[in-house]
Image 1 (cartoon, rainbow over the protein chains, first blue to last red):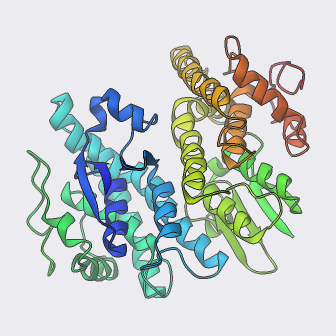
Image 2 (cartoon, each protein chain N blue to C red):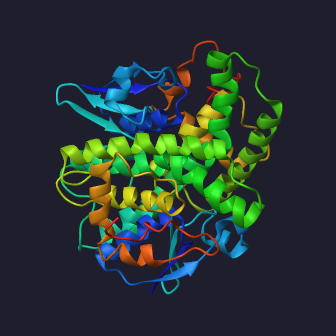
Length: 223
Length: 223
């Protein structure tokens, strides 16, 4: 069976978990803290990053969350997530990159550093200036999600796609860490609220990282 | 005709230019300095990054270099660059991500900041401590390229693939900025030297960024 090396607040692992869930692909979760730099993990992935999707029977290790999602899309016929014309597929992949790169650089990455790594590893207090800037940039990204939801049924187009899963993965980590203020973003909130009820998303929302607690609205599907 | 918005030292634009070159796809180069934040450019790409591949006749704008490469791969039959089994394709995509994310974060990104942006935009001197760390990390990446070339004809497997193009794109920018010491990396040097002679690569190596000059070995195919 597939083994997914991940930790609960890794947004890239969450994206892959949502894909595995939507496609109904059996897998085990293996906990990996990439910041510990375990040699056996670097042997699986020289980049030293989660997620890694590993099949010990086949001796196959898939690394990089986008490469993993493309692999799952190519090998599973169920629940297509990168579909339509080449231009439609490019639009889905553009949005995945927007969340994995820009949203991560602006919001998820700094939040993970300030609120998870400083607490669990560095034993430092978070920098309130960085947190304020992160909140400001999160509002800009939520404005863009509002705009997309105003113009399309789902973020990437007419149907649920990898773009929605990537956005939900990052938003859920940011929301867990108290970095999302949904006020004034009714369209984004409504889209995310529908998403929170999906069977692929429920196990993620029920999970807790050690020490760090999410705000009360985090896993409430009616919030 | 396609218009590629790019600047000469953008490694992601170089990767797309190499793909366009290998596949023989006609295009015009449009100069864009993303750090200027031009409103018309943000209208094409809300992420504000190069490259953007734009077709004004079709009103089509493709953003994110990996999404662009996947699009070109799906729409052009010539010179396949992401090929083989699903596992082989995942390996190619893993390496593309390794260069676009890790090599960029360790080497190309800091070099562009210290040696291009500080000179052209911020009017500051480069930080020699950062440059030394960049050189140290570049050696680690070159060690990994040596290892790949020892075990495979090309970086991604038996044939030239997008992995080689991504690696060459980043290495060429780092080399232009004086950040690569090839000594002790004979395998990587030999692979890169073959690459420098390819017709898709020659126009890139002949091009110069304003103000900043590359070292003398940069475009020498025998160096």
